[in-house]
Image 1 (cartoon, rainbow, N blue to C red):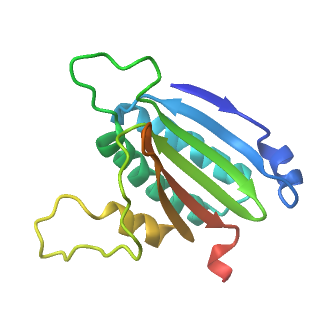
Image 2 (cartoon, rainbow, N blue to C red):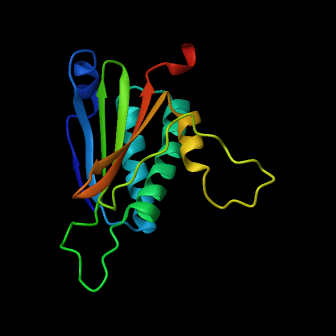
Length: 169
């Protein structure tokens, strides 16, 4: 896992109102064993930006779902050839801008047409083992955006957005 932290802590809080401050930029292999470190780093960035413990916990759960989707559905599947180094990486970026925290999870998998919101939670009666991630992310954040990558190069990005003091709205 490669991680770069930029302008965190007090620097981020001082610039919080006027600039787009990158708090975390990390690249990880599409391997579930790397998720805890990525989630921990994002939690630290969330706390450094001044978000409440509850908001950070909600964002952490949503990030877990986004990372799982990127690993399970987004890893580029190449047959017969090895992928170039870094080609299958999952990237996690965290930045704050105007009292909002943005988390982007980007993968290099095959491009797809993301479903349109609202995302409906499957009934508990259903035997579905998938289909709960997007509805959970939508419930846990103030805004969710899922974008496909370029049609030729593939990939997708999931943006999780949390507003500072979102519980006061």
